[in-house]
Image (cartoon, rainbow, N blue to C red):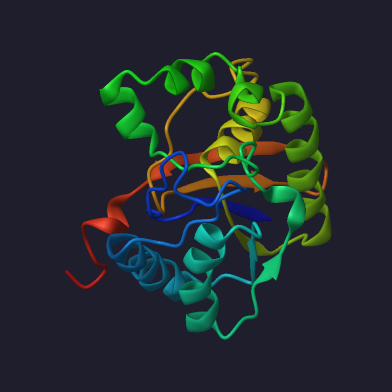
Length: 203
């Protein structure tokens, strides 16, 4: 089967104290909505058998245009939420990096509990079985899983033997592909495809 790991499109920024004190669940920005539709236009002609999504709004809103285009009902998988799903803010990684925000260092170094996240070992222990279960459920299918940057990092890192939890930055609405055989073999076919965000098939 072919597993398409898709990072959600660009979400709205929610700063500390702007989300009412509880976990934030931002919607997509106008650019993010466009990215989600470009993703759907790109993937639909090749066919996708199932569309699965993290329950967080930014993932669901990214999955919806693809599912609608294909005439599918997206399936919500609670186990695919990001490690910081309970945080009271959402600051884009690129912004934290440029601003040299202390949260960026904490994120890279795996100190996720400092801002309401899971411990990296707990997160990996949740994500790897969740995605392996998807592979086992849909043999011979092409399955699109719309999720989060941390989810994609951890699972691909697991397949490639990379110990660092966050080792690359998946682009918004990017696609990374994994081939999985019935014998248990896993191969990373592509990493961080983003060409569909700047071009079209008929261009």
